[in-house]
Amino acid sequence: MTQYIIRRLLGMVPLILGISFIVYALLNLVPGSPADQIERSPTMRPEDFERIQENMGLNDPWFFRYFTWLGNALQGDFGNSYINYAPVEFLLRSALPNTLILAATSLAIAVIVSVPLGVFCAVNRNSLFDRIVNIIATAFSSIPTVWLGLMMIVVFAVKFQEWGIPSLPTSGVRNLREPDGLLIRIEHLIMPAMAIALLSLADLTRYIRSQMLEVVRLDYVRTAQAKGLRSRSVLMGHAFRNAILPLVTLVGLSIPGLFGGALIIENVFGYPGVGQLTVQSLQASDYSVAMACVMMLAILTVIGNLIADILYGVLDPRVRYD
Image 1 (cartoon, helix red, strand yellow):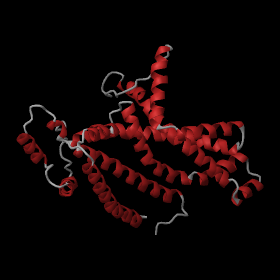
Image 2 (cartoon, rainbow, N blue to C red):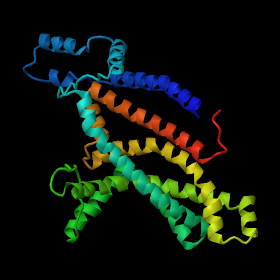
Image 3 (cartoon, rainbow, N blue to C red):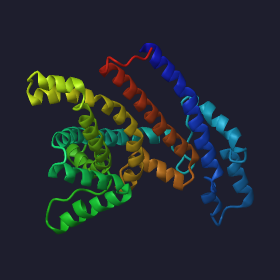
Image 4 (cartoon, rainbow, N blue to C red):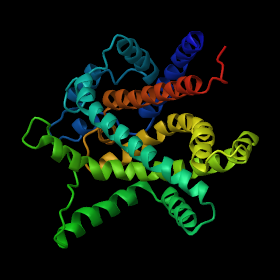
């Protein structure tokens, strides 16, 4: 196992370097630059604009700037924002905890709800409840994230307020140090977390259902039933334990979707996380902030997949990473 982890960590290095090169190239090849807003100023003289571009290093070819950025990034220096001149590290430290809380909460909701739901649907295959759950899961899998977030705002914020029902906040977060900060923080988290969780929950429920249906047909489950064991013992002690193992890998593979959903949902709900910071930096052509945000999400995704593979080997003794 140790050798496998070392090999995976070493394999992550060229992967992350390749991602950084591609992302940096795409950011610098699209039209626009951080100096465009400065150039539009009516008081900006051409010679002053050229001097500012030179100070920003924007006159050099993009591949030269990439190696300069990479050398600084390897030393932990991601530079400063071109827009507000704040250190990129400070901006990430402020936004990353919010995104991690949002992703962890939505993943926990999706797993806690989908596991019993998928098992119950498998046990009661082709029942009315099973058919309804399958229809709803298919519908949620097809719903665009933006539309789902906007509809939640309309119903749980606007309509609830019109109906006199306690409504949920639509944007921002609250500092935990403020009075009732934790409770208000949870209220701000409910809608964005549910919006992301609903999309993952639909896929996880259908996957668990199909895995349970496959496992209950295997010989060792039939043998346990033939021995006279109670249906509950066979279901939870034999079938469920083996059907749940692939869920670990699926959860790991769903991590990119969680962060991808956060990228959209954070902007819909005005949630101050890495997703909102990424979109704002891309809109302003703030290369340094955009690069740091994208690389942070890429690293978290790669680490999440590695943890999923390791857990799968720990939970299933049949798996060997020799």
